Length: 403
Image 1 (cartoon, rainbow, N blue to C red):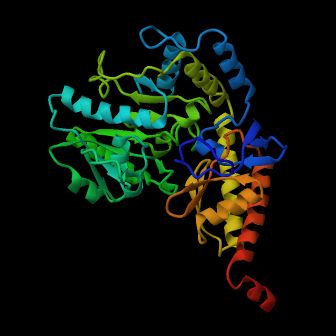
Image 2: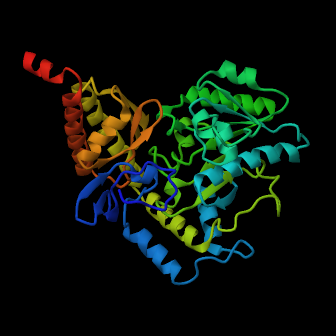
Image 3: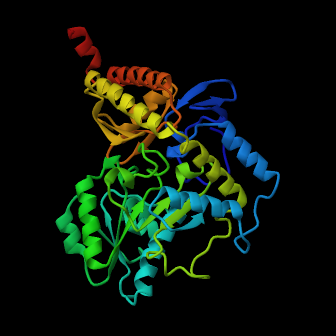
């Protein structure tokens, strides 16, 4: 790789893509890769989706940015649509998932202050969570690797094991403001949360005057087969963060809340210069146009079921490579026996793109427009990748000879 002036915060793979078509990415020399990483679960409509491209192009020719000193009517429309599709009454637009989650944290704290309890500022989070890379969201996740070297860790977060309701109860103090959880821990290893656990959290919050906050940055906008992940759980949060799929590649984040939870946010209490600008909300509205079409989410669920069935076959065929298939909808994780990076490298050699996660998991998060043929192609490439990994394992040749 040639020398770059890019700050070395990423260990980038030495591949550059020039264009994309649906679930495929293409390099300058014409090599085609099947993209089951979706830009880390972002490209919900795949690449170069005609409706999204047209919406962004048309808006860019009108006005790109005006600031929130003025009304943005398409932003108001997008907020209306998000509220109609969800539990929410209010929406705040940001630019990213981390910013959305910062907004969630601030709303939870501000709500308690507005209710006369400024001492309530602490938020309970769960081991393995990931909420972003800002100082507050890093403090919420308590991942030592991500926090090292950045000075004192921001106070206000108490972490407990995922699924341990008694630990949650023990962690609650007179300073507790709310509980923050992901319906599926994506970065943490595609760990699915049990509905009964979230129902218990809802009950605790109701009994003790706490807010229940969801991080749906990765699970929202159809990724799990419903518009929002909470709809699969049968539990409604008070406040929720969105991003990733909401812009399907264009940067936009959103905080959704009930009127009650958001009552502390008044003019001047929170803001974002770029948040919800005309170009961003044009993208968001275009995404909702597609995801809300009749049959769209039905097809997501159908493809998810097919993919999980085929992945179970791969796991059974390659038990020395894949230990477990995890996930919901089209947020799927393969718990690896070998280092997950080795499996991802082998997949990339077969021109299948994936995303790594914690707990030695490789994520497969295809665009929501994925077809049955593309699922079949991904399975074929994963199968060949597993064979390559098996051949590279110590003793593989000896076992082959013995067989």
